[in-house]
Length: 282
Image (tube, rainbow, N blue to C red; front, side):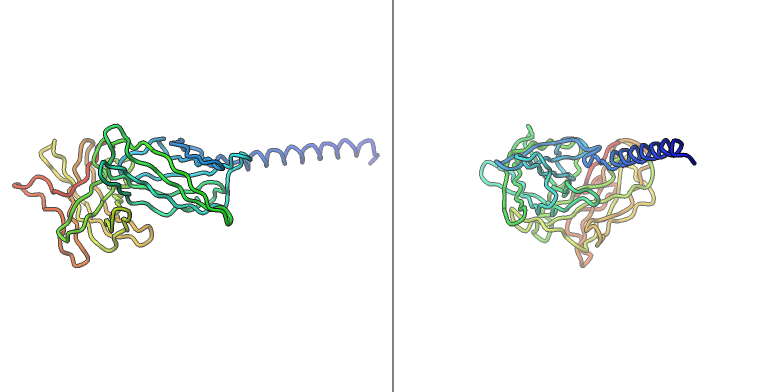
């Protein structure tokens, strides 16, 4: 083949390779906060800490939080930080924290970290809480603190109570986030107040479940199962049967490792609701 015919083929090949490479690079650009809404920025002199979730709002109950750290000088996001946090509720005469997880890197994302905080209360205007982030990058330690707003959830998705063993516990609903007429996976966290700043997870208890609809003659539903501890995610799981839309009360009883009831009562004709319960409406 003559050279004048070879050169056009080479040029086409080079252009095709170049276009393919550009497209590949564009395809590899990932939005690591896609479908997340920024809740708050907390800054110090070196970094801005961005807090995200699905709604852009903190509420009482379980809050899964995504975190990014941006270097103010370079505008680059930090990929190798070690983080911890301390939420504090300031009350008139004292202060306390709440249940919270460790902060870990989100799998498959280079700049996003995550954890959960369970706010058990708030003031009527959402005030009272602050959040401190402590973090290290390499051998350098940093801290940043600011007030945050925590709004009251519409239904009781968390309850704090004293049990008959003279200990205070917290139960928080995690799932279902979008209830449906079906058998739903009911997932809750169970925590014990060790002191005003420490709320460790409680293992190997049992939480019985009896869902009722107060506005419909307090009828129940079939095929529910009690909640038991799952070692993998360290939460409690059970089956929640919802047979129609509306307002439900999830009547609970808490049993310790010896299967002794330490909080809650059976629902009977004489007792329409347990003293230990969560609410759900859909």
